[in-house]
Amino acid sequence: MSLERELQKRSGSKCELSGSEENLSVYIVPDIPENGLKTALYASKTCIEQMNDADAIDANHWRCLNDSMWSEHDAVKIMAWRMLNRIKADWTQDLLGMIYMEDDILELAKASGDGEDEENKLIHRDVNGVILEHGDSVVLIKDLKVKGSSMVAKQGTAVRNIRLDHENETYIEGRVGAQQIVIITEYVKKT
Image (tube, rainbow, N blue to C red; front, side):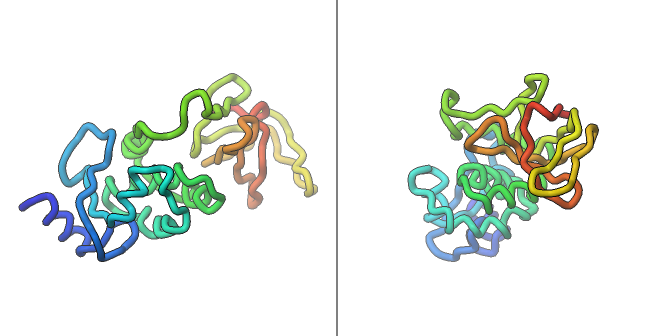
């Protein structure tokens, strides 16, 4: 059976990202050493154009990732993760905070050659100079008063699944208790 037929069968003849039923074709996920069904997905022309050209991205088109990021197929999850990282919007950061991927699949997703120019990329570092990435876990190294509330985040508090501020390398976001707060990177240590 051809790759396209297998993908048609797997997807129900719909785009595995947007659910569209028009102008579908095979899309091979770039920058992955394997080939075949595991690294391919069935996608619409619109999705493929936007995956291949960062200037053509329409953020509202990608709201469909709210559903497709839960796919059981690795290629779909990898492209959902990559597209959520390319679109710099609050709602994409929320979805990135929810997406679940095995560590090996997340490494494949991060292996994409696109992304920002190295010289323009913000690098977030903890108190020890260790690079922080989206989804990392950190520990607070001192008590922090949370502005705008009476809450004090205690030293030793674990903050899991952090988000990076895309405009300032000294800020990260994380959940402490039931509250989402902004934390300055010099007060955290990566775990």
